[in-house]
Image (cartoon, rainbow, N blue to C red):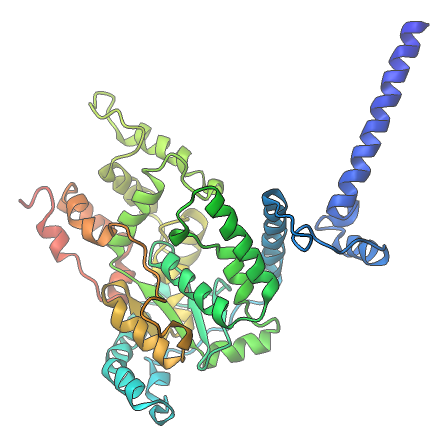
Length: 418
């Protein structure tokens, strides 16, 4: 009897603890209706109940854990907004016609000189994109999804499609500079500056710090489909590119030679092991945990050989998507095409055109002090055969044609060309 009573007591205690945990978690996360299916009910009950609205930050208490939870909630909310947004409308290809309609008389003589010296090149780039898109039906017709930074505070507005491994860190930091000097949304900037301070305390390299989610918070797209369509049509639509081979090398260095490659959800560490297992001979003297560059390139060639459509690429590739897929190049009539190889002239043109006066100072443009993959490309690609270089080119051929890059130098330096 004692034993039975003891077990009952334990069960009772366990049930009480479980109930306590349930109500605690319900209070933290908005109740059982806080999930996707019961979001409306969860919000209603929270609005009816009185609560203490003073945050830890307002009380002067900084909590990295609390900030991480806040960021997770913001990311989930942004994902829900994007999923439920209508797709962006396709724009008729114009070959950079909007640049020819800019009223230069509205600018100072100095700014007119900057714009006049560069507008011809910008129009020529946009015209090439339009011509290639029209001649290549297989890369046209994709529906654009909203992956953009919308700067509606400057005139003309800027709609920018960030591309991973093409100066995206530099430009996100530049937009943060603009936001810190001109934005009035103190709550978002406060979150950014708190995270910045936390990074400093951890000893991180602050010059390379940015937070994509906070940047999207600072530059959200218009909520109504009509307003988004209007802003998109009348904006400077910006894409930044570099030689496709240099970008692929940059992705290799970042994802295939790191012990903890991010984002974790893409499982790059597991991919490293898979590539080694598939492409490295058992008798190889190379015992590195990381794939070699030729091993990685052969994986890219083999894994993308059957990808022909926009949907094929989106469903099977993450980090090294072609430009035409990532930014639906043939659907949005980009009129500002910035190249990493001519970054100084191109960024000055955009800053002048859209009056980004916050960046006029010589120290405001932030660049990362690292050896670029463009400088190292020759050393890495000389490990490949001509056949591998041609095959890799074929996988990304639309990008080469759209943005006028070639592979002659890479072929001349191939391992079987010397």
